[in-house]
Image (cartoon, rainbow, N blue to C red; front, top):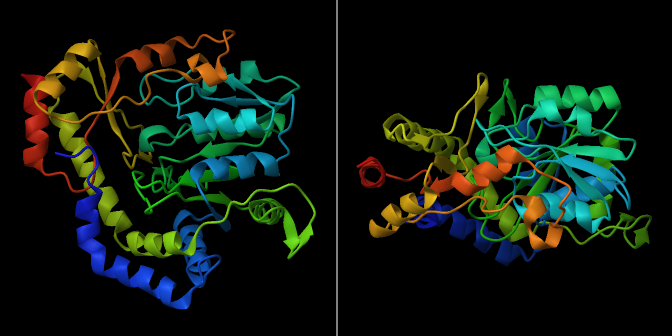
Length: 357
């Protein structure tokens, strides 16, 4: 049993993938090939955002977005303490300071009721994370951003394809960022990411930043990065887009089967009205994680812990001025079970028997 089974997905579309890669090799357009533009158009239409800028990773997507809104030394960015390192790493890279709002126990996303009290004259952005595939409460967060004229950037690294009140993740805020890391719901065969916005000004800025700050070839008007998406990865993603909606349905079915059959001693993911998660992870809370881990190990079932430490307790980001009780409690109890579109009920039953009995 695999935690994420990319092999089954590849076998489903291997001929199309192989042909797409071969076409890139034959054309030798490895950087900015036509597949990149085609993918950006597909992604833009899929989300409903006006513009899409593909890039080299989800981390670079966040970095470019923060650079575009002018985040600099001394600024503050409100975000979640319960997330992968990239969310806060990019803030530190620009010399800014993350300010952490605690999370909700139900969906592990930032609690919007706590954001407003954290706003100061130094606050220059709000970065909610749509964790494990479910969008944060963007309606309330956007209202706060609008009230204080603070840009909102969705970290949708795990939620591409999710819906929130009829709209797609990454098209819910001023800027949306996602990742195409192989294990993500829509993943390539390397690193990749994308940025979404409906602002023509931000679109031009971010396109320039992505390519060394160029306005035209060899005309550098701002500091940028080398953040382009490889043509090969774009070609792979185009083929995966063909089966993406079907894979989302499969993920939802796997998640529902877990939730309906897991013992009540575990807290299972909760979905809110008018939202649909893509279940990048299926994460539960256990009252005794060590015991649960031992059971899984005895049954030879793979698992993961997303995430064992809150951001401000990581050595690289250590900050003793924060205490987010819910996030710390969740980090001590959370456990992620095998999740991918090609799981069979027979496999899930093995997991359920192990955990329930």
